[in-house]
Structure formats: C-alpha cells, structure tokens
Length: 351
Ligand SMILES: *Cc1c(COP(=O)(O)O)cnc(C)c1O
Image (tube, rainbow, N blue to C red):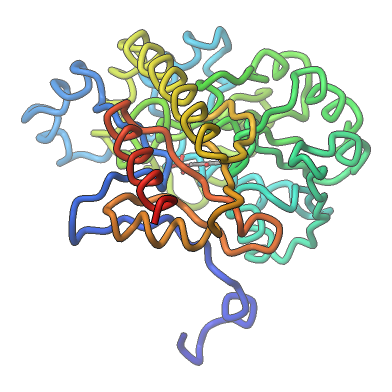
C-alpha cells in the first residue's frame, strides 16, 4: 500500500476470490461455476458482427436485455436493474442503505463483511444456529439493512418464503436484500414478493446457473423506487457497467432458458449422487439447495482434504474460519468430474 491511501482502505481486508489457477488443468470444484458451456445461441451470437459493435459505447439502459428479464419474471422494466456481476448490486446496496448499520449471518458470503468495512458500516453479525440453519427470529425487527443469501453460501441451506416475508414485514423502515445467486438449484425465489413490499431487493446472477461467470452479469428485481436508487449510483459511477458482448449474450441466454433449466436439473441429480457417495464414506453433508455441498469427515481435517485433493488435481474450497474449518465447500461439476472427485477422496481416506 502507498502512504497516500486513506486509513479506511489501509485497514480493510479485501475479499479473497477462489483460486483460478492458470498453471495446470484441475477438476475445478472450488468457485461454483457451471460445468456446462453457455447455450449454442449465446456462443453463436458472439460473432464478428457483435465484436464490431465494440467500437461504440454499449447501451447504458440495456434496453433489450432488461425487457427480456422483465418478461421472464413477469415484472416491469422499471423493476429491473442490470449490473456488472451481482457483486456490484450488493456493493450498491451497502452504499445506498447501510447508513443505519447492516445485519448478516456469521457464516455467509464473504463479500458482506468486506463491503461493511469498506463503507464503515457497523455490522450486526447474527450467528447461524448449531445446525447451520439461519436464525430467522434474530433477523426480525433489526431496522437496519438486512442481507441474506438464500440459499446461503457456503452452507447451501435455504429458508422458506414465509420466513423471508416475516423478515421483510418486520423491518418496514429498512431494506432487505435477498441474494439469490443459487436459487435455480432447488430454491424458491422471493421475486414475487417484490410486488408486495417496497423494501425488498432480490439479487441474482448469470455466474452460476447460466454458465456466464466470466461475462459478469447480475440483475436485481425490486420496487421501482429502489431500482431508481441503484440506477442513481450506477449513473454516478459507471453508466456503461454492462458491456456490449455481455448484453448480447445475456439476451440470448434468456431465449435459451430451457437449456439452463435442464442443466440445473442435471446438477441437482449429480448433487444427489455426490451426497450419497460421500455419506457412504462417512461424511456429514449439510442439506443443499445449491450447486455445491458443504461437507465434513471425521477421518480427515478440512484443510488436509483440501490440500491432498489439490495434489491429486482436484480443487475444492476450504475456509480457515473457526466454526467451519473442518468443512469444505465442493462445487457440483459434471457427473464425470464428481466420479473423479469421489475416487480421489476414497483413495485419500484409504491412505
Ligand atoms: C457467486 C456469488 C455471488 C455473485 O457473483 P457475481 O459473479 O458477482 O454475480 C453473489 N452472492 C453469492 C452468495 C455468491 O456465491
């Protein structure tokens, strides 16, 4: 860091993204990407014509894409906000609504504490219950910004729509953000509730179920005035936050929605297979509604399993945090990848 940097920035511990190694090819089960490529429509749409359009600025309103997303969720265009990955939406929400503090779980997406430090927002950290379920009751009546990943990461566990509604109703003077990065893998979306409540923002992403992590595309659905707030930040920072190629790809992906829903079904089936195999090996696996599972073995530490699998060419995610250090988060890849994973785990446990 330079001597010129602000004190707050100097103090911050930045978010650590999962490894994206460029040295050799791993079975990559560490950052919850899809094992399947984008749909054929998307691949074909990124052609020479599309690239030529890079000469011009992109449409800052993302009109076509916004229309398609509004249509998909049966809301108005004024209820849709598009962003450079959903991390941007979360960032903007902390910026816009964090003045009175923020509440989130102790075990959840690692970006929430980073944003709260970045903006100097004092956090109220609500521990998950002993079984890693969300302490729904504690989120009620917080009267500050509430941020919940549903399904949660890295646990994969979800709360019901009834619970979400109660949290939203009990915090009428503050915004509740539901981060639905993993909702397509068996969760229930809170998007319909955004029509009923003026304090609910649902955030979603193309990075997981829509095979476009590298394109950086996220969207939020909410009441029109909340969307106007997010747009105000966008137009005060970076109006061209979704590039031309990503807008084209994002639109095609909506047209090919069936393909992605099918892929999500395959991943759910592969998740069931992986859970059963791990349970046979003595693992405890938390119930997952996501494209990853969170698992622990009484026979090997979380760190050791992570390191040994890496030597074997399989990457999973380990978090060196007290409550969860004996767990690992394992992305559900293709059936073939998970068979390799299971065979490597079997080998390591046998050594
Ligand atoms: C992956 C993830 C996101 C967002 O990712 P983007 O690639 O920025 O859209 C948001 N929330 C959670 C909980 C995630 O795991």
